Length: 454
Image (cartoon, rainbow, N blue to C red):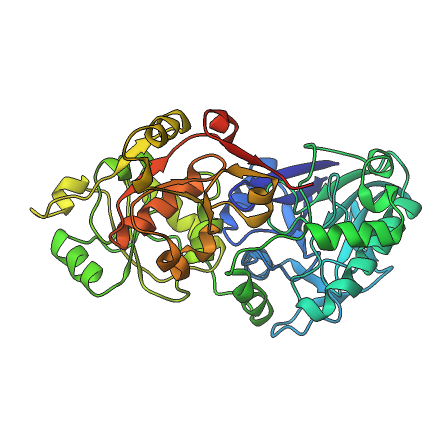
């Protein structure tokens, strides 16, 4: 029996394909199902079952479409109000896929109806468990996605679900979570690329702390999550449309200018330093790397038409794929022509890129009073340690709070430069003089730091 792991690093998630003897079972597939189909093709297996651990809040599922194109049985936790045929799975049910057998365990916490799937070898031996957003590597799934009124109850339920898995499964059971590899669905940061129930028994807070301590620390540690989450559950319950990864319509300089003038979203996927060196006025810089999809999903005006600018057709195709994973489908055009050609004779905008050492030098010269330092990390990061005198406006709040910044040249930073690069493009869009601090916060020792309060 083989478990193939499919990483979706931009969302911090994993999908799985369990295969044996020409048969396969998919768990928590992403919307772009061609990747899982390719793995199945390489293994020469037929997907007979598609399993969801829960109704997802951080991506559009590919489960419904994968089941349709393969003829597989679609298995969704019972109790969920969905608008399509499926097998409603409940605690104790068995999924029998010939050589592959799984048992459902109700593990509420991340959602009310969440289930985990235990992979059974032979008559009853558990060899692996697919835990979705329940037990993660060194953490658990967050419990606040269904609304503040449910968060505390779900936190207690999450504790008991983790304990249930640890109690019922052997120590050698491999733990395969969906979330926890950078996903905002994780309550706290996770640890490790692989793990077992035995390892979690001695390292996971839900299994090493008492219930009240675990719940209190979980609630205290919950940070903000992307705004686009509000749309995912709705789409996944209604039944997502099949993914569209076709090439967007080409656009010319005149069309781009018209769209910018109309206030449409023009998203530049190029590297942050290339954007800073020269970009179309009115466009936004969202470098296609790392956390691209999470932050554009956080800031994007949902449903608005969106045009992409990229270095290449491949970059645009990759951008479209990532956007499709969270249901951003209104891509009305794209171009990979050089940005100076796209400007059509209009001067490009640009701003400086610097590091923390340059910021320290700028703060020591005679014009230091004109410098505004902006920290766009989340509040919990800022409270841990920050630059003295820095203004903290988390990136997802910046558009609504730009007016709070004093006049002057804004030096914007985050933890690594990525969020700061998006913020710099937003500030530039609003006409502010900006310098992008493209540097790791660990290098901020050259600037006066304020430590975390006692």
